[in-house]
Length: 340
Image 1: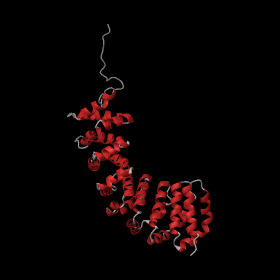
Image 2: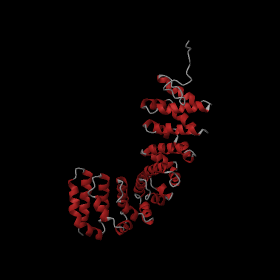
Image 3: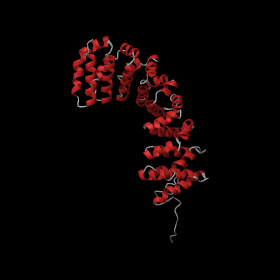
Image 4: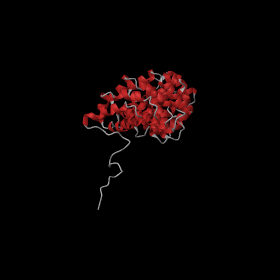
Protein backbone atom coordinates (compact mmCIF):
# COMPACT_ATOMS: atom_id res chain seq x y z
CA UNK A 1 0.00 0.00 0.00
CA UNK A 2 1.36 3.39 -0.98
CA UNK A 3 2.21 5.90 1.75
CA UNK A 4 2.44 9.71 1.44
CA UNK A 5 5.93 11.17 1.33
CA UNK A 6 7.07 14.76 1.92
CA UNK A 7 9.92 15.94 -0.27
CA UNK A 8 12.94 17.36 1.49
CA UNK A 9 13.62 19.65 -1.49
CA UNK A 10 12.52 23.30 -1.29
CA UNK A 11 9.53 24.34 -3.41
CA UNK A 12 10.42 25.33 -7.01
CA UNK A 13 11.30 28.95 -7.84
CA UNK A 14 12.13 29.80 -4.23
CA UNK A 15 15.63 31.08 -3.50
CA UNK A 16 16.66 30.16 0.06
CA UNK A 17 19.26 32.94 0.06
CA UNK A 18 16.58 35.63 -0.36
CA UNK A 19 13.99 36.76 2.15
CA UNK A 20 10.35 36.17 1.19
CA UNK A 21 8.90 39.34 -0.29
CA UNK A 22 5.61 40.62 1.09
CA UNK A 23 2.77 41.40 -1.29
CA UNK A 24 2.32 44.79 -2.92
CA UNK A 25 3.11 47.93 -0.96
CA UNK A 26 4.23 45.91 2.06
CA UNK A 27 7.30 44.54 0.27
CA UNK A 28 9.73 47.43 0.90
CA UNK A 29 8.67 48.22 4.52
CA UNK A 30 8.99 44.54 5.45
CA UNK A 31 12.49 44.31 3.97
CA UNK A 32 13.55 47.54 5.72
CA UNK A 33 12.59 46.00 9.04
CA UNK A 34 14.63 42.92 8.25
CA UNK A 35 17.63 45.08 7.34
CA UNK A 36 17.70 46.16 11.00
CA UNK A 37 17.60 42.60 12.31
CA UNK A 38 20.40 41.56 14.65
CA UNK A 39 20.71 38.20 12.86
CA UNK A 40 23.33 38.38 10.10
CA UNK A 41 21.62 35.82 7.83
CA UNK A 42 18.36 37.78 7.98
CA UNK A 43 20.13 40.95 6.84
CA UNK A 44 21.84 39.07 4.03
CA UNK A 45 18.57 37.60 2.75
CA UNK A 46 16.78 40.95 2.98
CA UNK A 47 19.55 42.68 0.99
CA UNK A 48 19.51 39.95 -1.67
CA UNK A 49 15.75 40.38 -2.11
CA UNK A 50 16.01 44.18 -2.09
CA UNK A 51 18.76 44.04 -4.71
CA UNK A 52 16.37 42.23 -7.07
CA UNK A 53 13.45 44.53 -6.31
CA UNK A 54 15.20 47.84 -6.97
CA UNK A 55 15.92 46.88 -10.57
CA UNK A 56 12.24 47.73 -11.06
CA UNK A 57 11.98 51.52 -11.38
CA UNK A 58 8.79 51.84 -9.32
CA UNK A 59 10.18 49.69 -6.51
CA UNK A 60 13.43 51.67 -6.59
CA UNK A 61 11.54 54.94 -6.04
CA UNK A 62 9.44 53.32 -3.31
CA UNK A 63 12.63 52.20 -1.56
CA UNK A 64 14.20 55.66 -1.72
CA UNK A 65 11.04 57.41 -0.47
CA UNK A 66 10.60 54.84 2.32
CA UNK A 67 13.94 55.70 3.94
CA UNK A 68 15.93 52.84 2.45
CA UNK A 69 18.99 55.00 1.83
CA UNK A 70 19.37 55.90 5.51
CA UNK A 71 19.39 52.23 6.47
CA UNK A 72 21.83 51.32 3.71
CA UNK A 73 24.17 54.06 4.92
CA UNK A 74 24.37 52.31 8.29
CA UNK A 75 24.94 48.91 6.70
CA UNK A 76 28.02 50.22 4.87
CA UNK A 77 29.81 49.82 8.20
CA UNK A 78 28.60 46.24 8.74
CA UNK A 79 31.26 43.71 9.75
CA UNK A 80 29.95 41.04 7.36
CA UNK A 81 31.54 41.00 3.89
CA UNK A 82 28.40 39.83 2.08
CA UNK A 83 26.27 42.51 3.74
CA UNK A 84 28.68 45.22 2.55
CA UNK A 85 28.82 43.76 -0.96
CA UNK A 86 25.04 43.63 -1.30
CA UNK A 87 24.60 47.06 0.30
CA UNK A 88 26.97 48.68 -2.18
CA UNK A 89 25.26 46.82 -5.02
CA UNK A 90 21.85 48.20 -4.04
CA UNK A 91 23.33 51.71 -3.76
CA UNK A 92 24.90 51.35 -7.20
CA UNK A 93 21.49 50.50 -8.70
CA UNK A 94 19.76 53.36 -6.85
CA UNK A 95 22.45 55.80 -8.08
CA UNK A 96 21.06 55.38 -11.60
CA UNK A 97 17.94 57.35 -10.54
CA UNK A 98 17.89 61.12 -10.11
CA UNK A 99 16.04 60.76 -6.80
CA UNK A 100 18.68 58.32 -5.61
CA UNK A 101 21.55 60.64 -6.57
CA UNK A 102 19.87 63.50 -4.71
CA UNK A 103 19.61 61.27 -1.64
CA UNK A 104 23.30 60.39 -1.92
CA UNK A 105 24.20 64.06 -1.61
CA UNK A 106 21.57 65.15 0.92
CA UNK A 107 22.22 62.24 3.29
CA UNK A 108 26.01 62.41 2.81
CA UNK A 109 26.24 58.77 1.74
CA UNK A 110 29.25 59.53 -0.46
CA UNK A 111 31.49 59.89 2.61
CA UNK A 112 30.81 56.45 4.15
CA UNK A 113 30.82 54.93 0.66
CA UNK A 114 34.26 56.40 -0.01
CA UNK A 115 35.63 54.78 3.16
CA UNK A 116 35.11 51.40 1.46
CA UNK A 117 37.60 52.04 -1.36
CA UNK A 118 40.08 50.23 0.88
CA UNK A 119 37.72 47.30 1.52
CA UNK A 120 39.47 43.90 1.26
CA UNK A 121 36.68 42.43 -0.90
CA UNK A 122 37.08 43.13 -4.63
CA UNK A 123 33.35 42.90 -5.37
CA UNK A 124 32.62 45.50 -2.70
CA UNK A 125 35.23 47.93 -4.03
CA UNK A 126 33.95 47.50 -7.57
CA UNK A 127 30.38 48.28 -6.49
CA UNK A 128 31.66 51.34 -4.61
CA UNK A 129 33.44 52.71 -7.66
CA UNK A 130 30.49 51.95 -9.94
CA UNK A 131 28.24 53.95 -7.61
CA UNK A 132 30.74 56.83 -7.33
CA UNK A 133 31.12 56.89 -11.11
CA UNK A 134 27.37 57.15 -11.65
CA UNK A 135 27.15 60.05 -9.21
CA UNK A 136 30.17 61.82 -10.74
CA UNK A 137 28.63 61.68 -14.23
CA UNK A 138 26.36 64.54 -13.15
CA UNK A 139 27.91 67.97 -12.44
CA UNK A 140 26.38 68.35 -8.98
CA UNK A 141 27.79 64.99 -7.94
CA UNK A 142 31.24 65.75 -9.37
CA UNK A 143 31.31 69.12 -7.60
CA UNK A 144 30.34 67.43 -4.32
CA UNK A 145 33.12 64.85 -4.66
CA UNK A 146 35.73 67.50 -5.43
CA UNK A 147 34.60 69.60 -2.45
CA UNK A 148 34.91 66.67 -0.05
CA UNK A 149 38.51 66.01 -1.17
CA UNK A 150 37.95 62.71 -2.97
CA UNK A 151 40.25 63.42 -5.94
CA UNK A 152 43.61 62.85 -4.13
CA UNK A 153 42.33 59.52 -2.79
CA UNK A 154 41.29 58.40 -6.26
CA UNK A 155 44.66 59.39 -7.74
CA UNK A 156 46.46 57.24 -5.16
CA UNK A 157 44.25 54.22 -5.97
CA UNK A 158 44.75 54.26 -9.77
CA UNK A 159 47.96 52.25 -9.89
CA UNK A 160 46.94 49.79 -7.16
CA UNK A 161 43.61 48.52 -8.48
CA UNK A 162 42.80 45.74 -10.94
CA UNK A 163 41.88 46.66 -14.51
CA UNK A 164 38.08 46.72 -14.26
CA UNK A 165 38.13 48.92 -11.15
CA UNK A 166 40.98 51.09 -12.46
CA UNK A 167 38.92 52.07 -15.50
CA UNK A 168 36.07 53.14 -13.20
CA UNK A 169 38.42 55.24 -11.04
CA UNK A 170 39.85 56.97 -14.09
CA UNK A 171 36.36 57.64 -15.44
CA UNK A 172 35.33 59.19 -12.11
CA UNK A 173 38.52 61.28 -12.09
CA UNK A 174 37.69 62.49 -15.59
CA UNK A 175 34.27 63.67 -14.41
CA UNK A 176 35.77 65.45 -11.39
CA UNK A 177 38.49 67.09 -13.49
CA UNK A 178 35.86 68.45 -15.88
CA UNK A 179 34.42 70.64 -13.09
CA UNK A 180 37.71 71.51 -11.36
CA UNK A 181 41.14 70.39 -12.53
CA UNK A 182 43.18 72.00 -9.73
CA UNK A 183 42.81 69.22 -7.09
CA UNK A 184 44.06 66.67 -9.63
CA UNK A 185 47.01 68.89 -10.54
CA UNK A 186 47.86 69.41 -6.88
CA UNK A 187 47.73 65.62 -6.40
CA UNK A 188 50.31 65.16 -9.19
CA UNK A 189 47.81 63.23 -11.31
CA UNK A 190 49.47 63.92 -14.68
CA UNK A 191 52.33 61.38 -14.28
CA UNK A 192 49.82 58.81 -13.04
CA UNK A 193 47.62 59.37 -16.08
CA UNK A 194 50.61 59.31 -18.42
CA UNK A 195 51.51 55.81 -17.22
CA UNK A 196 47.99 54.59 -18.08
CA UNK A 197 48.15 55.81 -21.69
CA UNK A 198 50.21 52.76 -22.68
CA UNK A 199 47.92 50.24 -20.97
CA UNK A 200 46.63 47.44 -23.24
CA UNK A 201 43.03 48.03 -22.12
CA UNK A 202 41.19 50.51 -24.41
CA UNK A 203 38.84 51.44 -21.55
CA UNK A 204 41.76 52.49 -19.35
CA UNK A 205 43.47 54.43 -22.14
CA UNK A 206 40.19 56.12 -23.01
CA UNK A 207 39.45 57.16 -19.43
CA UNK A 208 43.02 58.34 -18.76
CA UNK A 209 43.14 60.41 -21.95
CA UNK A 210 39.70 61.85 -21.15
CA UNK A 211 40.99 63.05 -17.77
CA UNK A 212 43.95 64.69 -19.52
CA UNK A 213 41.56 66.71 -21.70
CA UNK A 214 40.12 68.29 -18.56
CA UNK A 215 43.49 68.75 -16.87
CA UNK A 216 44.88 70.58 -19.92
CA UNK A 217 42.20 73.28 -19.76
CA UNK A 218 43.76 75.54 -17.06
CA UNK A 219 47.12 77.21 -17.74
CA UNK A 220 48.87 75.19 -15.01
CA UNK A 221 47.59 72.01 -16.61
CA UNK A 222 48.93 72.97 -20.03
CA UNK A 223 52.36 73.60 -18.54
CA UNK A 224 52.27 70.32 -16.63
CA UNK A 225 51.46 68.38 -19.82
CA UNK A 226 54.51 69.96 -21.46
CA UNK A 227 56.76 69.36 -18.45
CA UNK A 228 55.84 65.68 -18.38
CA UNK A 229 56.65 65.36 -22.12
CA UNK A 230 53.17 64.08 -22.89
CA UNK A 231 52.75 65.59 -26.34
CA UNK A 232 54.90 63.00 -28.20
CA UNK A 233 52.86 60.26 -26.48
CA UNK A 234 49.60 61.98 -27.44
CA UNK A 235 50.70 62.30 -31.06
CA UNK A 236 51.30 58.54 -31.16
CA UNK A 237 47.83 57.99 -29.69
CA UNK A 238 46.33 59.73 -32.72
CA UNK A 239 46.81 56.37 -34.46
CA UNK A 240 45.11 54.37 -31.68
CA UNK A 241 42.48 51.79 -32.65
CA UNK A 242 39.97 53.24 -30.19
CA UNK A 243 38.15 56.32 -31.52
CA UNK A 244 37.57 57.66 -28.01
CA UNK A 245 41.30 57.61 -27.27
CA UNK A 246 42.03 59.37 -30.58
CA UNK A 247 39.43 62.10 -29.91
CA UNK A 248 40.79 62.69 -26.40
CA UNK A 249 44.41 62.79 -27.60
CA UNK A 250 43.50 65.39 -30.24
CA UNK A 251 41.53 67.35 -27.64
CA UNK A 252 44.48 67.45 -25.23
CA UNK A 253 46.83 68.54 -28.02
CA UNK A 254 44.32 71.26 -28.94
CA UNK A 255 44.16 72.55 -25.34
CA UNK A 256 47.90 72.38 -24.71
CA UNK A 257 48.84 74.02 -28.01
CA UNK A 258 47.14 77.22 -26.86
CA UNK A 259 50.41 78.15 -25.11
CA UNK A 260 53.62 78.74 -27.06
CA UNK A 261 55.49 75.86 -25.45
CA UNK A 262 52.63 73.51 -26.31
CA UNK A 263 52.64 74.62 -29.96
CA UNK A 264 56.38 74.11 -30.25
CA UNK A 265 56.38 70.64 -28.66
CA UNK A 266 53.39 69.45 -30.68
CA UNK A 267 55.00 70.54 -33.94
CA UNK A 268 58.33 68.98 -32.97
CA UNK A 269 56.46 65.72 -32.26
CA UNK A 270 55.05 65.77 -35.81
CA UNK A 271 51.41 66.40 -34.91
CA UNK A 272 50.30 67.97 -38.21
CA UNK A 273 50.44 64.88 -40.45
CA UNK A 274 48.32 62.57 -38.23
CA UNK A 275 45.88 65.40 -37.46
CA UNK A 276 45.33 65.97 -41.18
CA UNK A 277 44.53 62.28 -41.60
CA UNK A 278 41.86 62.59 -38.90
CA UNK A 279 40.12 65.50 -40.64
CA UNK A 280 38.29 63.05 -42.91
CA UNK A 281 37.09 60.90 -39.99
CA UNK A 282 33.33 60.36 -39.76
CA UNK A 283 33.56 60.39 -35.98
CA UNK A 284 32.43 63.89 -35.01
CA UNK A 285 34.61 64.24 -31.90
CA UNK A 286 37.71 63.02 -33.74
CA UNK A 287 37.15 65.28 -36.74
CA UNK A 288 36.29 68.41 -34.75
CA UNK A 289 39.15 68.05 -32.28
CA UNK A 290 41.61 67.46 -35.13
CA UNK A 291 40.37 70.58 -36.96
CA UNK A 292 40.57 72.70 -33.81
CA UNK A 293 44.06 71.40 -33.00
CA UNK A 294 45.21 72.32 -36.51
CA UNK A 295 43.63 75.75 -36.07
CA UNK A 296 45.67 76.43 -32.94
CA UNK A 297 48.88 75.09 -34.49
CA UNK A 298 48.32 77.25 -37.59
CA UNK A 299 49.07 80.31 -35.48
CA UNK A 300 52.75 79.35 -35.88
CA UNK A 301 54.12 80.63 -39.23
CA UNK A 302 55.96 77.41 -40.15
CA UNK A 303 52.85 75.33 -39.43
CA UNK A 304 50.65 77.71 -41.41
CA UNK A 305 52.98 77.44 -44.40
CA UNK A 306 52.81 73.65 -44.19
CA UNK A 307 49.01 73.64 -43.93
CA UNK A 308 48.35 75.99 -46.86
CA UNK A 309 48.66 73.19 -49.40
CA UNK A 310 46.01 71.20 -47.50
CA UNK A 311 43.33 73.90 -47.60
CA UNK A 312 41.42 72.03 -50.40
CA UNK A 313 41.09 69.05 -48.05
CA UNK A 314 39.73 71.28 -45.28
CA UNK A 315 37.24 72.88 -47.69
CA UNK A 316 35.60 69.48 -48.22
CA UNK A 317 34.60 69.54 -44.56
CA UNK A 318 32.64 72.78 -45.01
CA UNK A 319 29.96 70.82 -46.88
CA UNK A 320 29.60 68.22 -44.13
CA UNK A 321 26.01 67.84 -42.87
CA UNK A 322 27.16 68.40 -39.26
CA UNK A 323 27.25 72.14 -38.53
CA UNK A 324 29.88 71.70 -35.80
CA UNK A 325 32.31 70.25 -38.34
CA UNK A 326 31.38 72.99 -40.83
CA UNK A 327 32.21 75.75 -38.33
CA UNK A 328 35.46 74.08 -37.21
CA UNK A 329 36.60 73.70 -40.83
CA UNK A 330 35.72 77.31 -41.70
CA UNK A 331 37.66 78.62 -38.69
CA UNK A 332 40.68 76.46 -39.57
CA UNK A 333 40.70 77.70 -43.17
CA UNK A 334 40.36 81.32 -42.03
CA UNK A 335 43.37 81.04 -39.68
CA UNK A 336 45.52 79.12 -42.17
CA UNK A 337 44.74 81.56 -44.99
CA UNK A 338 45.45 84.64 -42.89
CA UNK A 339 48.05 87.05 -44.25
CA UNK A 340 49.89 89.60 -42.06
